[in-house]
Image 1 (cartoon, rainbow, N blue to C red):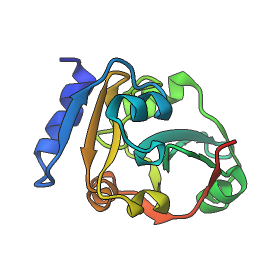
Image 2 (image 1 turned 90 degrees about the vertical axis):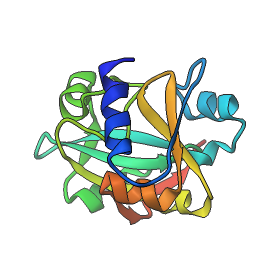
Image 3 (image 1 turned 45 degrees about the horizontal axis):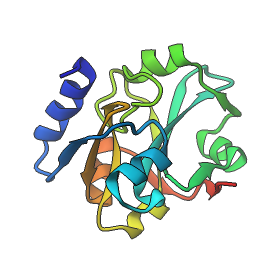
Amino acid sequence: MSKSLKRVRALLDSHTAPTEIKETALARTALDAALALDCEVDQIAKSIVLRGETTGEAVLFITAGGQQVDLERASALAGEPLGKADAALIRAQTGFAIGGVSPVAHLNPCRKWFDTTLLGFDKIWAAAGTPHHVFGMIPQQMMEISGAQPTEFTQKSK
């Protein structure tokens, strides 16, 4: 078991929220994960890490799989212009590689927002620290464990 997966598992085990970790053939994208889990693409909670252009800090948007972050709305929430975070910043901030970024168990805390679209499901799935592992739980519990603030910041993916 990878260090990243162990870190996610340990955090999930420390909470009373029932969780399920599944291994998938590949879950690098929301569509991959939805196909592997036989669920709706919006039931996949993507961890989108952006870079604050003023602070240089990473910020996280936990986004429904069929949605994309609206940069104008997200920048307003963050209080600064946002841009693409590079792999080095993502790894340094979260401890995870791109394609396996979990919404929980980050090495360094960051500001986080939670797509309210996800709250419309009984169960959602997110990366568990690797591109081949996901965990499922009730959306409200994922939001609470991640420390993310619920809000609207998305637009439908094209």
